[in-house]
Length: 184
Image 1 (cartoon, rainbow, N blue to C red):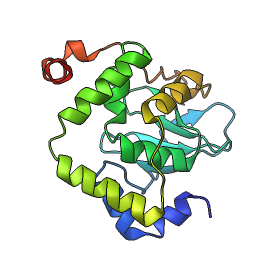
Image 2 (cartoon, one colour):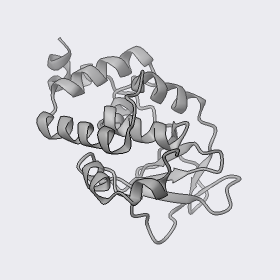
Image 3 (cartoon, rainbow, N blue to C red):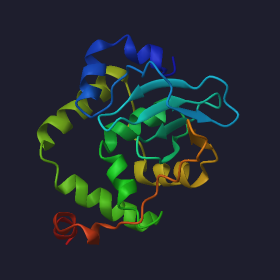
Image 4 (spheres, one colour):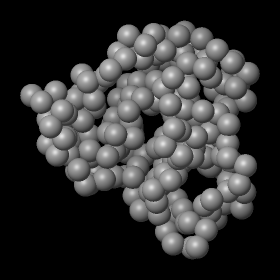
């Protein structure tokens, strides 16, 4: 059986573990964005920053930030869960992508992994989720994230009609002293 939001949410313990990785499976009641060509977006969850996860009709997972950025982050729901488990700081990887540079994203991932405050808790959550869902480890979660965002063609708009921008941000880890030292 393939992993779907319904299969996942039926496993309360796994949902709780994912919550510790900043993913909640309770969608917002009121839509605060539109997606060109998608009549009724299926929001499947949110994160602590107010962002929304949307399962598109193509089965891609779209992330819509509360700060006007959006893009496809995974090619399937299972790939999305693999990403969140492998790299719970995936949004920070995009923040420090230097405008969408894969090598910078890899540097950011390594630095962010090295600075995890609750590494034991994250590793325990990773193990529990993978075991409970029989979820294989992602081969290259950073590369898959890069490919998904780079190829993203979804146009997301605020309620006033203004388009959201890409999830790639201009910063690199060199802009952050903590991450710069962690990468050294």
